[in-house]
Image (tube, rainbow, N blue to C red; front, side, top):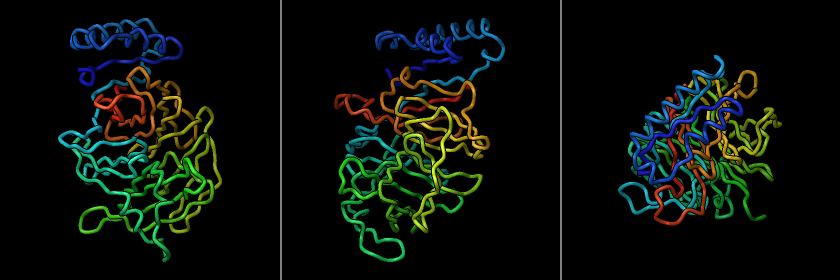
Length: 321
């Protein structure tokens, strides 16, 4: 099966990109002989590591572990219409996914891929404004883009953007735990023009950070305001964000199907840690969630046919560094 094979990729500059093509150029028929193929790939990687200089031989590596099917979810008839944002809640062992086509969010078991729960658009529509005000209504629930989990305060944030109609109102929704489960508690209007395609909570300073294009900024829910933006050289087209568990690194996915590691203290890209995700089968990287030593990358590619197990799938990548 395509989603059971384990391709290896060794990256180190241009040679690494060449090797990724050499190792991963195959057909699904070839992948059916997965054990033999993987053994051959490991030999290629080992030879490459021997030939490369010492600093390149120990470059970061990623391995495709598996995929999580979302169309439909395992053991369910429910399918995602798109796969836009994600965030992991460790205490529940839940991966939350956002869907801007079906206007819903989903709670999923990241180990089994089983659907635990769906929160429908109607729930968000009826949510009151933070501090008092009218319910959100439909203009604030058209574009669920990103999700961030505040581990210190046990709060989940869902950001809805402005794509692709001027009547859509960018909005942040806050979910708090009630009777043991997250419920949509309130919303905050976002500044005009906001469209946070990526969002993540930082363990180092306790702030929510949101990204779009090249810009990253912090966001304060209580005031509904965002800081002036800053940029990281070499990073553009941000589609997804998540911090490492200790907050030392920020991982971002981009519109060019890259997974990039940023040293958060220096705000610089970590050398040797920019991966092309297309060799793994990812066509539209929209979000990333870090769970242990794995990266759960959401693929929002819409052109796979219905019935394809990779349609809007989550690709689980092992960090083999």
